Image (cartoon, rainbow, N blue to C red; front, top):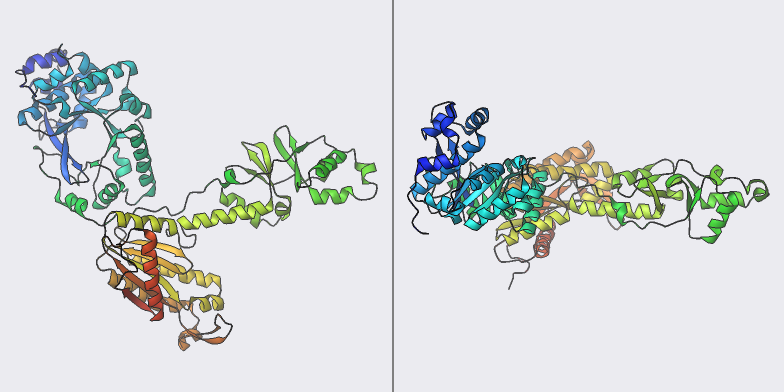
Length: 610
């Protein structure tokens, strides 16, 4: 960069803030006296743990009522000089950054309309020359557009954006997702950076909704080719999640608070997380989303009858279509009744029916309260059909509508199959008994651990003598025992480091990153042995077990149910796939059950990667 021309601050202030000399308010006085200054907050590279840039934040005189930016902005609005104030803040940030001779990247806040005014008021040499005159390389300047709802003239903003890009400076979109941000503005401005609003970053390690929102923003950023910055990082757990999501940059009090001098390194607590190989345990949805399963359900495209259709005409329809179990009666596009084939044809075949009733409307032999299901109805809606006391819904099937309009028919057989498949798929994501993550989230977390190079312990927990207990006391008490395992596993795991999943039945998978995982496993086993006794009756507790039939139907004595945990240590580079880790843990579980209750640690892995 060539040496900048000497800076005439007074002349520049007159150009950027032409009405400043005539203003009499306290803010105008502070500006004329150059009593405002900047503090600098770092942005971190979340991959390397280094300071990537600084954001300039304006402050008034320390110890006065004008120190905070909120107070300064309120004064600017009251004195009718908001645009002048914003441009003055830009000039102040560039001046003080240039005086420091800093080589790093600088983020400066500006509203879209103020940015337009800044470019319009620039000297003839243009925006790049203006920035250079402060001793700042335009290529190191990022103008961070705030207050997105204030975009007055989009066409003029496009011209301004072109001028900024031509100077070498880049643009950022601030607080994306705060309610004022706009996807259209993102598309129009094509910013190099988008800052995700702190609302979605705060407690992202605890709330799956925030996690999903950030992942959605990531997909948009990939489409636009935009770099993301996470704002408002305040806890180590949130930082770990953001790092593992692949967010490249972050900002917040954990990274570094605003201070008078730029930082050379981020906060030590944040640096430890960035360099820590342990993988974040992503927040799980307690209840999986309720999908509209009927979109994929085979729908029978059946002809319909009307309110005027006669019994003879309906019989002819059934004879033409032997595959139809029923026919819907519609009023226009709206289904109003359903005629069951077997019941109707039984009536139609009786003596003199055709002669007496053949020309009469078929509505008299229809179910005028059929079950109507929308294409987007979810599993819980469909289950009510199966559990209804009125079993006509299974024999008649149901009418399918799309936005209230007749779309076709569904059969009871299809309904049972679809509900069963949907329940099985849902259980793979979250077990309906314990609400713990199912097979798919378990495998995804193992893959993340392997990809991140984390060292962890894969522990497979299973109950001993559970089947005779379940047979003796029934499924309700059996479910209570399974939920007991779940509660104890969760209670003895560190939610920030350890992952508890429910494979199914009485099988659980625990993925430990806690260094004291063996002690935690032993505590789970011991507490289960004590608390599970309360699920047996007094006679069984006194005897130490129950008499029950084994798998071969032979009556024998089974000790009270206990818990076995098989564990295998997963070291960096030993495995490539989640399936290999699961197989190793299952083999360790098998060895643990052979040895009785307790923890068994398999020292040799199932198969090391060559």
